[in-house]
Picture (cartoon, rainbow, N blue to C red):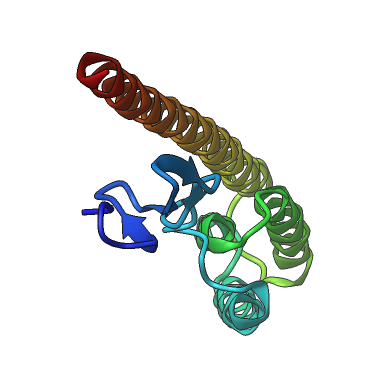
Length: 178
């Protein structure tokens, strides 16, 4: 497809964009750029912040309306899950810290109810759920980033091998005609 075209952009099924340029029979490739690396993180932070604030306020109000003794701190996990879509994976731990603070605020300002030690255990479970979720999400984002880096390196290696094969084929056809 490149034989009669000076340059063309190619996007393969993995989302790699490469420009192949034909210049006196030699193929040159621009370094590929992963187009699909941020499938789950392509939403900008300024669009997520209002949604995150709405989630935090809604869960806090829900927590403040429930009497102590009900596991009202557990819904803060949704705030942590929202961190998955932030571009920086550190946002997951920031949202976990905010959720923890709101869980403690909910403990002090919720209406009385329940046995004190059950209330404390419920809040501890909520904090445990928040930080467990944050850790799992952070590890999943880290592993996904590594996987995408490995995929990119593999595709670059494949492209280099294909270019070397084309060069070898051209060289052998030139040699056989001489």
